[in-house]
Image (cartoon, rainbow over all chains, first blue to last red; front, side, top):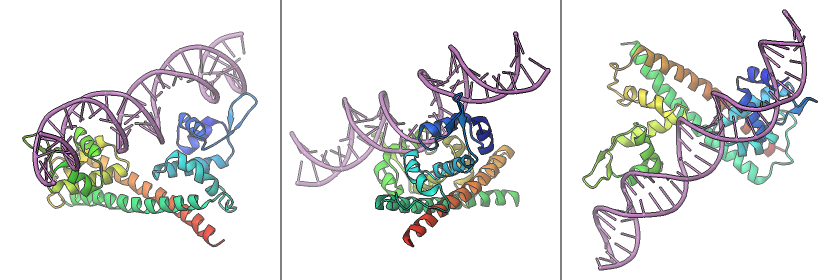
Length: 119
Length: 119
DNA sequence: TCGAACCCTCACACTCGTGTGAAGGTAAAG
DNA sequence: CTTTACCTTCACACGAGTGTGAGGGTTCGA
């Protein structure tokens, strides 16, 4: 798969895919002509990256935790240092707080919309 | 209340409060000496702004929808144009998608942590 | 063989939410 | 009166994401 197709299938721009690569988040193969070649698994990978970025994690952290998360079954325990685990716990808790905040705000907007509709 | 106290009570920085003002999200009074003077209601207001920013809304949008949301009971139906309502619906739906994404990612991290713990 | 639609790198520049620090005014307490 | 802890504005900088354009290569179908 070349960059255009991956961009289309993940809903990102080519630009952004190159940016993620520059940040060390994905490292596609290269064809003889220099074109990037992505496997099927990159679709999921990119979506996970977008999810984590959206969760507020900086690329720096994502780069570190991605190796632990990218194999759904065969988890990499090896490179999970204690610091890494503590970091993950903190991030998970921050995400929980974030989800609550987001839910409250969404519901506030929802309540407003409902009130207007019932007017 | 001056800026320092508001910053402390809302968990933001003074810098950020000035930025929100610059963006037209809050407009505190001014004392004779030029100091910003905030009323009690700004605590809630700032927290709501932070919630919406965290939800991914840009200040531009927040500036528009805040007048509709800032009075919990006495909602401003008046300035809720159809475009505004459509915007709010879109944002609410985007927030829902965002919550789902965030939850999935948090759970993935949680599952990883649980797996490591059970090793 | 030509053109369209891809791809490449490099680079400048903008937005948005923040941090940080400089240079200076003010207020209150020792 | 001086120190300390506020406050003011202004400005530079960063990270993440994104647009745009220059200058150039590749692939493929008409």
